[in-house]
Amino acid sequence: MTHVVGESCIGCKYTDCVAVCPVECFHEGPNFLVIDPEVCIDCGVCVAECPVEAVYDEKMLPAEQGEYVELNARLAKQWPLIVQSTEPLPEADTWAEKQDKREHLMEMS
Image 1 (cartoon, one colour):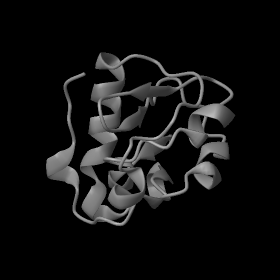
Image 2 (cartoon, one colour):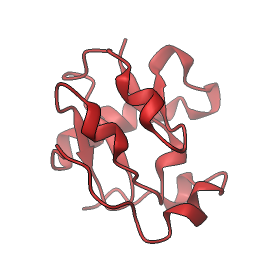
Image 3 (tube, one colour):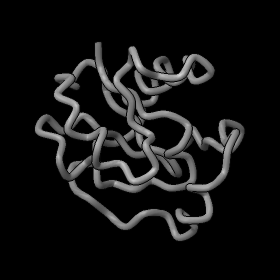
């Protein structure tokens, strides 16, 4: 098992999770972060750090977000590695409250 970034991250991109990751498994897209399942060691330290609760243990991922397992794996191969915290997106606080954000995920970087 690995950890997965879910829908709550879209439009926010808080990087508190990146700062605590001991193996540098996060990758950054235009408005979303993903975890590389081939690098993640399943330590879980990132879960508590996410202010929007977007990081899940794969087995705890809500069923309606099942596609994010494949999205994380695929996009981690395309997007650049991020190894330190950066500022969240300018409207992160507004996006943090939104639901059903999948259509807003920008896959191109």
